[in-house]
Length: 309
Image 1 (cartoon, rainbow, N blue to C red):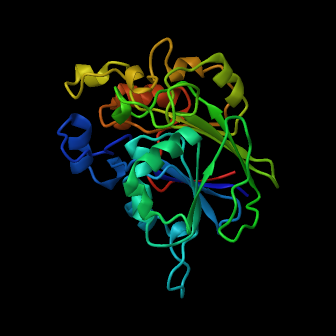
Image 2 (spheres, rainbow, N blue to C red):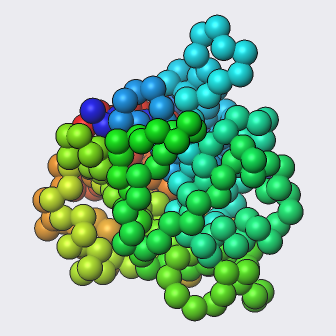
């Protein structure tokens, strides 16, 4: 049985963002916990005992403490159900949480060589002692079975695939430690329970919905998909920034080329947006944008939502 827990559904900075007074952040501060979102990450397990994280957000310590499934087992002085972390990109909101996992428990970091090169180039990540925390390169379209800390099989298969995107924003104008050519900066993942065959897709960043991507996820039981912005220029319109969604590596929800329209003809049982920016009006209930996504069959999850496949 494949279990998935949404640790966080927000984009970088979460909702509310610490220094933001936009409509979404004001509503999240005054409207209670149900409107708040920590930064995007999910955890999944095939046995309910050993868990793997997809991305390690800056909110990871808070997320682990808020998720009973990821607490140390009773009576253990030091223990964690977390067996590994799979990184789909190298943005701050995907890797900074690794620094909150420096207390000596063994686990493995799985990432493309381009992302591992970025971690290796920044000495702060050396607080994760490689005697305990292995760094395992993963290849595009190369399925692998993440292992438990003792080396036992997990019974899960992860297949990474390339998604249109870009390298981390903090590398703009700088040499990429992993080289400038080839894919690997932005990955999607297909996670499969090898016993049952049940699977889900995780795509937290996507600059364009291509025909190849549509063919990949058509017929899926569950898809987590990039929901950063409602419209491409919304941050500019709101006075919150000077970049479009696409320039940051994120396709909009709305519009002719947006995620809702481009994925409308696919057979997907459960469609969930995550990595939702504080500027996105679809995050708020009772807005026309929220009504539009729900009528199109999409959901926005609360932190802590669990799905069983």
